[in-house]
Length: 127
Picture 1 (cartoon, one colour):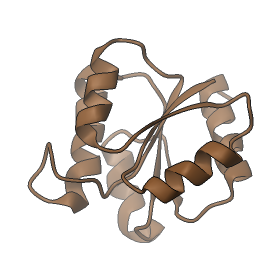
Picture 2 (picture 1 turned 180 degrees about the horizontal axis):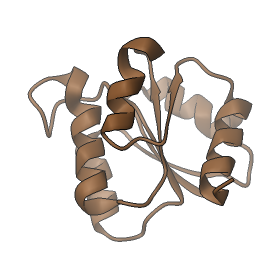
Picture 3 (picture 1 turned 120 degrees about the horizontal axis):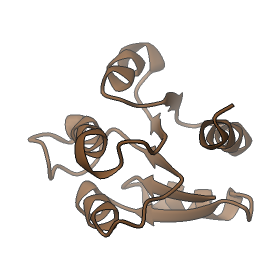
């Protein structure tokens, strides 16, 4: 399974690459611009893990950048690819907005990698 991981936290990205099982091919990009460039090439991943707080590129402030990228994905670049939001924001504050913008699921950081993998497998397999 090929998974695009969009997060500006270099340490967490390194940890995720080490902890992911071999059947998950994790492609890490640190910001919205790199994510857009990757998706625009048309080699769509099976799933996307997206942080909400990213360096501003599509929006005015970092805190809304992930939602702007999610909107762009849903409207143009990756309409049918499952998206899991992985964020430091408390679930009760952000989950509803993320689902309204087209996310398939929401998880708070930190999370168990095994739980994230199980969720990705379920979303990709459609079960």
